[in-house]
Image 1 (cartoon, rainbow, N blue to C red):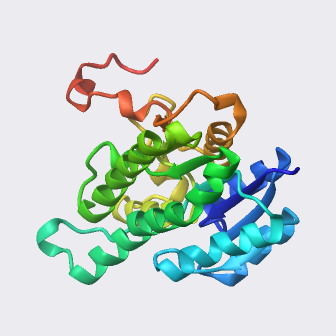
Image 2 (image 1 turned 120 degrees about the vertical axis):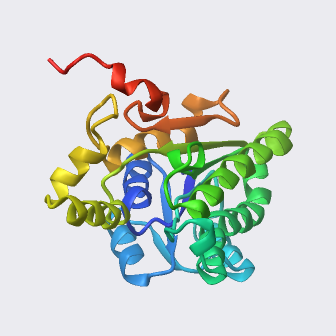
Length: 261
């Protein structure tokens, strides 16, 4: 029987790239998100199913899972790629924006994993969550985003521990700078501040990354697809950075780097 993947947040960015990559690997793909237009476009491109649902509510999370299983009869891989940010330091952050970020980045993954687990136990399937390098390292004025993504890493590892004995694997991918619409919005702020265009701002942001560039959604999707596949059958609870080497840099030593060239 054809394996099935449910992609939460599959309408844009990394989620859309994951939908394409999973379809090319032979999965039947269900794409879910809040905005009907983008998910229908992605679903049509991969001959899959689009489900408009807000996974940050119990009803929305259950709807996405039920629609996927109702259409395809099974669930083998769940990818949670939805994300939201609300930049601010703690003293300036509002409770409304805090709750939005936590709801999208942490509560929604909890709810959709909870709804999907009975099916994943039956199929001995896999969960891959898309966290962020910001879940492992602190970013300036990003308390809500960093906290939510750090929580997502631990949620995923708790699932790996609790449900590994039942055959379910749960792993997380932590991308660094990936050129998505969400990243472009942040980069455009830097571009305006530095008086450069978007490409110039990405170059500034990547100046201390060993790869010296941002990644692509397709590069992140490759990591997600591998973790979801049987090729990663003994990988459980892992945190895989997809960041061009950014996580290994000790910022305090960069002044000692030899001149380029």
